[in-house]
Amino acid sequence: MMADGKKVLVTGATGYVASWIVKRLLEEGHHVHATARNISQKNKTTHLQKLADESLGEISFFEADLLQEGAFEKAMKDCEIVFHTASPFITVVKDAQKDLIDPALLGTRNVLEQAKATPSVQRVVLTSSCAAMYTDAIDCQKGPNGELDESIWNDTASLDYQPYNYSKTLAEKAAWEIADTQDQWKLVTINPSLIFGPALAPEFSKSESLAIFKQLADGSLSTGVPRVGIGISDIRDAAEAHYQAGFKPNASGRNIVSGHNTNMLEMARLVHEKFGDQYKVPHSLAPKWLLYLVGPMVNKVITWKFVKNNVDVEWKANNSKSIKELDITYRPLEETLSDTFEQAIQQGIVKPK
Image (tube, rainbow, N blue to C red; front, top):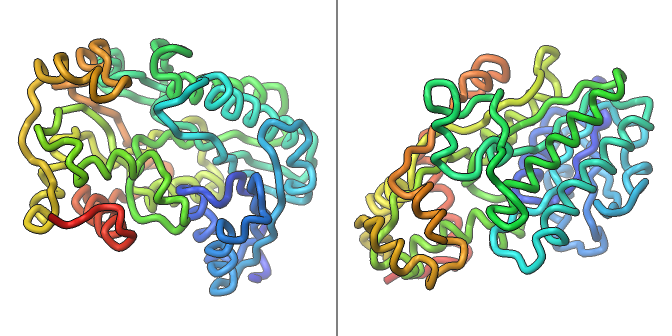
């Protein structure tokens, strides 16, 4: 390990985004304390151990349950920086309170309260989301110049409508409330938009991001792709933003991390340009009236309200703070989409025609 390497904690370290953060930390020679709900499942930690074996840094694994008070005490001991990434990302749930709200909110409280009780902690970096700023693309219009910025908070999500966005909003607000009760450490939040890009973790095949991507090649959208406004972050850019938020002295506050203001139709057409000859990637438009008609039958998330507020509505966010203060240079959208699709091919998740 490098002489100046720090001890840092990464919660939910085996996850899609967290694995890239761990990789970056190890490359710089830090000692990563990595938590997971069940470290006995070696298939979920092997990729992280391999990264450590091939890097300047070290890794130690700790078991911790987000819902258990005090669960992070051992893992956080002597750590200077805490990266709290652990939080579920699922859009279809049976029990939103149990599956989304409790892990996001209680987990954040447990981790940050432990940070208050751990004298070595100097900074906490929280993985929040642009979802804590908006529910539907139409919400972007509330912001300055019709775009999201770091001053905007989500006030339209609820337990019954877009509960994932609601969970991220509650969790981030709780984090700032806890941060305001102490002056030992600084809180910095990373607020990415929808994340795509190649995965290091085997959990890629179960990620919500991939579920969305898979629809581009499994025939689900054979009738056409709706022009749903979204923002996209590359996973490698998101990980770099986390790293810089942890180590840049002047990093502060909330930070939108989103490389591209785009929509589902543009995504599909970019993927079709490269892979359309071999894979069933749709590239025609599904008109809004069709979504009103069949959307709720295809997917219960696609309600009339969702269609009205997202289809043919521009999604727009201002990423200038991350560029200026975190030194992020965003990858081209084509690179992100291509790398994601190629990995999906390698893992047999998408099938040729």
